[in-house]
Image (tube, rainbow, N blue to C red; front, side, top):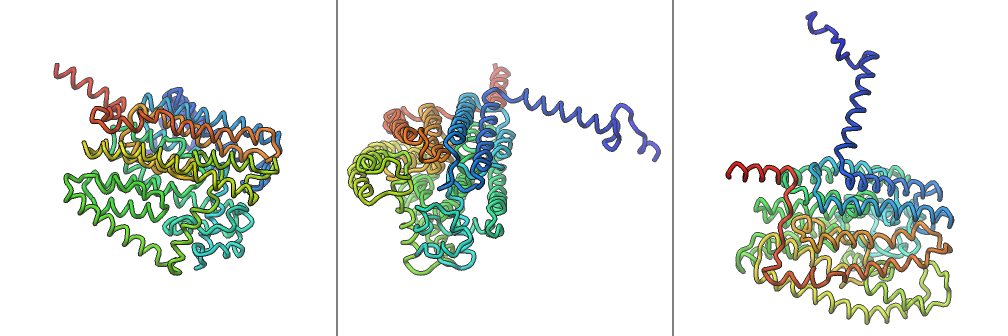
Length: 529
């Protein structure tokens, strides 16, 4: 027993004074080792995420409230925040682009570092989380948030909802509301509500992350495209957009499909669609994956249709008030179509409305009737043109799948189809809509699409930076040109991204193996020789 209690002077225990110094030295060694093990682009990516998070806190300090809409800092402070946010976002995207070109050796560790950087983020780029708080708290009390928006006035969150959304029924599906009920424990406190909701969504995120790392141990590009993606981290967990839930469910569906679990994959897609309707665009992959003929496809279509019907029936039942429950949700999606985003319809409608407006400094939340009428008529013509462009993108995708249906091509075609729909065909766009396509591009993404994603993420989020500025700021109106930049990027490399998918020769080069896997392959070839 004496031996057990003998003190090793070279390595003193932690409870002694020397032991504390020893632990401090070891901590310093690990910290330095972590810094040295990270590549320069990984450091840029992580530093950029940290700057964006700090900007969210700086905005709160400048305004005194985490609310975004109708709550802006002064012009001088807002301009400084805008510059800092641009710098942080640029660092993040440039760092992520470097990781796409040179996959990280340990993406799991980087994913957790990224989560650690964005978990403390406050509302910064959107006010939607407060609408979600209101809808979750009201629905948890049995109030109807689909057929009408009249219940909002009875919510403790009514003052936090942006003016243009106070007459809009909930656009989110019942699964999103159920998943948001933990925020009701905040009892009107925005800090507690966000903490409860973030914890509730962080746990499944970590679980799906671990499942994907085990399913794809040697495909670091999969994890780089999905879990290290700045759009996913900032707009998903940082800003708590419900698209995060859909991405997690679709990713689980991809993992289940790899194990030939067609019913399980269909259920997860149905859950994602019931959470938010835009995930219905992922249907091509779940309908065709693993099928070998038309009979297989018919059976798969029946399975997917039945799982969707069963899932929707179960989840809508607690909220059901009649057909107006679904019609109200669709109305919520159609409300405020001309919120500035980044589609061709947005740009044409906004430009036409601006030229017709009589007030130069009218807030973006308030549209006078004449402007709205001009916007609508201009957008109708732009919508027709946008639909034709979208069809020109979608038709080659279908032709490519008819000629050669394999899993990589199917994943890429599904992702490209989603991108074409949300950036070209849709009259309304926000950057987080692109998250719908991320799991499929994580499976397969050729160089043309990788370059496009870098530019798309950089430009699609930029219009939201205007929320740093008061409406009277000098830079506010010129900053609207960033929406035009988004449209240019959405059409960039159109032929290389869509039309070359039709012939077989365009089938993608597979993801490069992660550095450890590539090294193992080289060693194996050397042994064979």
